Image (cartoon, rainbow, N blue to C red; front, top):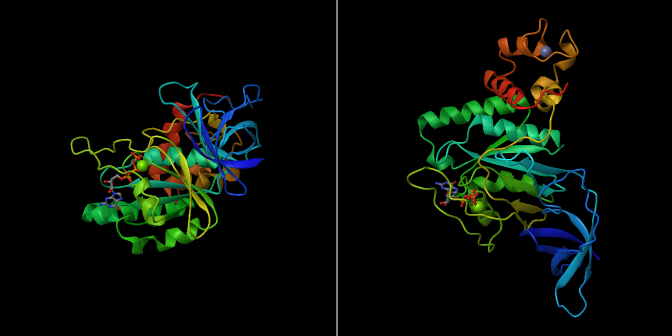
Length: 308
Ligand SMILES: Nc1nc2c(ncn2[C@@H]2O[C@H](COP(=O)(O)OP(=O)(O)OP(=O)(O)O)[C@@H](O)[C@H]2O)c(=O)[nH]1
Ligand SMILES: [Mg+2]
Ligand SMILES: [Zn+2]
């Protein structure tokens, strides 16, 4: 029996089979787990699994195989490099939800997320939420982000989850796809899903008055089906995005606006830092590649291990 994992709480998995029945499943002790990834969670939301019902146990089942993943997004714990967590698998799209106010998302965080999604071949869209709260200077930030990320090759949508009329374009993007919703705590991931899927009624919580940050309301990743077709994966808010094993040499390939220029650098092992004839640096000087994105490149470059 084949099914897709909708929810995982550590030891139990909620799996929907292809006839629409929901099973409460565990991993069979002897199941072979792909150790190449060595994540703290062997099975993630979005995984396709094989399972067998447990005799006389109602909706209980045993998972005995995980199908090879088309892709997945993995995150390293910022506190322990060895703790890798697969956020979700078999994605068509990653929606990074960001806010300019209440709370503020940093460009550094955005860029780390986008780099990870590029490395794992997951297309991403940037969604700026809470536009109802934007003051004049925030509108400038919004225009700047639209410009920078638009030029880099990303779609940027801006909405207010409180105004369902602003969500039409987003709805079209999500149709018939499996989409990961990610972003800091409090940016409105669950609120958006409540708007997109009437009746799902996810718990949401005000951003804290004193810290201006979200309260980590969602605690487990869970997948929900959209009425018009497709599904969304709600996830707990992430504070930092630790990058997976990535070498400094490959990093520039994960900045689409730099990737386009790599063949024009004088040296094919150019680090794009202080080499002569570097096409990336020239593009930064000419304003073709944004200084902010280049700064993120340098900052990520310094934070990853040197493996040429
Ligand atoms: N003004 C305004 N408030 C919003 C908007 N979207 C969400 N909120 C509020 O922001 C707060 C946090 O929303 P949640 O949906 O719980 O945020 P989340 O991203 O799911 O947070 P975690 O589950 O902690 O990761 C709630 O009080 C929402 O009502 C918006 O577009 N405008
Ligand atoms: Mg939530
Ligand atoms: Zn270069």
